[in-house]
Image (cartoon, rainbow, N blue to C red):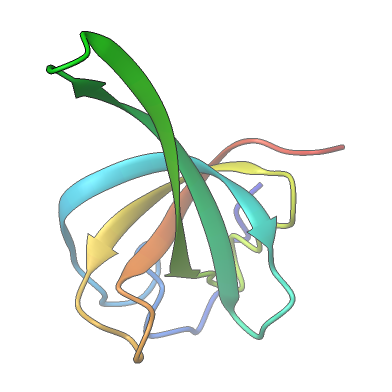
Length: 100
């Protein structure tokens, strides 16, 4: 799925962008903006007072390199990196399963 030719310096595979810290799995809900993917992550938290768990979700903007090119509906892994823009602090590193 990954193209071998990539001249993008912000690519974590072919460029020189280092990832560190957290890695999350989520679903791409939008990839309309240039080189940007909006990833929805679903997680659970525990409410100790009521002895229940609660499902929550968060949307994160991630850099979408040309060689990976994730599309809406794809399950992806994103990793944290340095801030690439005002809202992007993550980068798509791998596509787990695509919508084909």
